[in-house]
Length: 246
Image (cartoon, rainbow, N blue to C red; front, side, top):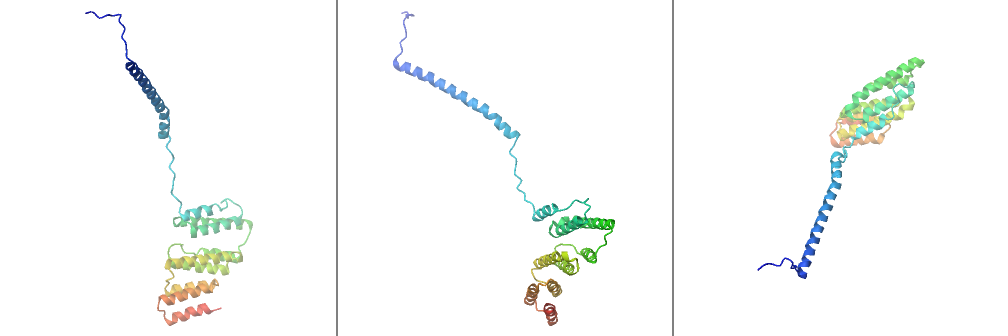
């Protein structure tokens, strides 16, 4: 039996519904794929830029206290080619502070700078015909006797004794400065020894405090020494004599 070619094929309503549904589904899927590819092409340059230019890392390393002190004090220095002798004398004072409070590894450098500044001051004075006062010569000579500022309590006490001497014999305008420097050295020595001095150190510390008119501090050191040791009567009498002298 031959099939009629002109006979039309009829679809049921259900078949027509599913045909439309499949067509719409394919269209939506194609649209979503196109959007996804578009986003990827937009985002790719940003990711590449982040690789080429990474976010800089923050340096969290902090400076040591001595480095901060050095930075602050070095800013106060006058130019080395200054023709003003007073400015070079101020530089010497700053380098002395750096010797005391700067980083230990730089003490040799600052010591050399002090000597250089002194030579410049001397040259400027000779050029202008200025003769040093006696007090200025005393300061220069005694400052040259300062031992190294290190972790030795013994040397710190020696430095305090020199500064105490300078507070009495140096130029009057510098007396208060040397008093403060002597007190600072004694505080460092006490911290290093935790106030546990032997008899010889105790006598020197008491004498220096008395020279600085710090009676209470001298008595405190003496009382601590009596508690920590069993001092001989001669030692007690000697220290009491120092404390009570006018």
